[in-house]
Image (tube, rainbow, N blue to C red; front, side, top):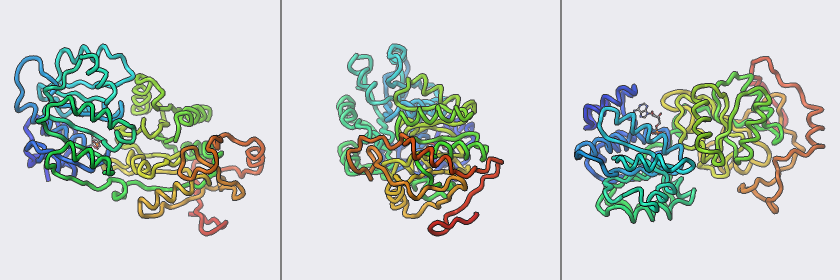
Amino acid sequence: MSFNTLGLSAELLRAVSKQGYTEPTPVQRQAIPPILEGRDIMAGAQTGTGKTAGFTLPLLQRLNATRSGGRPPVRALIITPTRELAAQVEESVITYGKYLPLKSAVIFGGVNINPQIEKLRRGVDILVATPGRLLDHVGQRTLDLSKVEILVLDEADRMLDMGFIPDIRRILKLLPKERQNLLFSATFSDEIKKLADGLLNSPEMIQVARRNTTAELVEQVVHPVDRERKRELLSFLISSGKWQQVLVFSRTKHGANRLAQQLKRDGISATAIHGNKSQAARTRALADFKKGEVRVLVGTDIAARGLDIDQLPHVVNFDLPNVPEDYVHRIGRTGRAGYEGEAVSLVCVDEHKLLKDIERMLNREIPKSVIQGYEPDPSIRAEPIPNGRNQRGSGTQRPWQPKRNTTSQRRGKRPQPNRGGNRSHSTRASGRAFSKR
Ligand code: AMP
């Protein structure tokens, strides 16, 4: 099926073809026609499915069809949970709207508000925003939402996770009652359904496959390893596998910083991306990574979510996520747009319960492969993970802090890993026996 059959205008088809897209993805096939008709939609689609073009293309077409001259009011409002996603969605608006005379802007927190005010003052048709900064502008009366015709809520489930739903409800009250609503969410919890009930008017329901649980483009593997040897194993995997672009997930901001520092000490260029960094630093980190100047980007779930990096071959879960759904979001960063990818999880004894939860959600076991020289020490006991599901005790301990004695003892008897470039895998056959793969 080609894009020509969806009812898109010549200017949009030209922009699509300039991107090199030959055919629409399933969410685009299903979403574009009803959006062009002016219908509300509720779409179950995650990042990587092509959902951004799925709502941006028809939105641009509708706005352009009824455009009037002069300084435009905000006619389409796209709300996203994170700054990165907002920036990327606006990039898509610019890309797909290249041959149309519509103006767009993006507003999010963490950066100076004044250039945003100036841009809004000059007039924009399409505004992409995160909820907090959007409300700041409303509070300062630098933004008028009374002419919004189309509202998009992108990644609504993530907005819920991040506590933005009260902000969203406040924003909804500022919009005209008569409007088109498009809601995108990877998952539909009861709370999202409740939000949708109050928001959408006889919506077209769209559900596309969770790209990476069904698509076999992503090879998933678990490397069992001791908690205090994860960093060493990661450096080994990156160096021996000659991985050039790796996105690594850490559970905490502190952990992300520390890991990036440690990798640098190992001679591997790395940078951390998380919510404590200024927006400028986050944007720079992403740009350096995309350009290939930085080999490893270490991020937390929230910061790394929605990053649009094509052909990312390696994603590493340095820590497993506490929420099984986040695993799918994380591995969805690789194997995109037809490229093969590998999602590696470094799992220590503390995380067995998290791994089981993930496997239950995926409805399958993830293959386990012990790397020779990094076999887990069976005498090490599980420790609680702060905020983890298998938390025991007070939760105030810091399981990531090495215990000096045990670490040095283990280091002393550690077999030397093969650093020759050949990645030497061995697969756990049963119990303590290992066999070469
Ligand atoms: P999204 O799910 O919106 O984050 O899009 C995921 C990626 O797919 C982006 O890098 C897009 O550039 C790309 N993409 C979107 N639509 C298509 C298409 N029809 N064919 C190929 N790639 C696409």
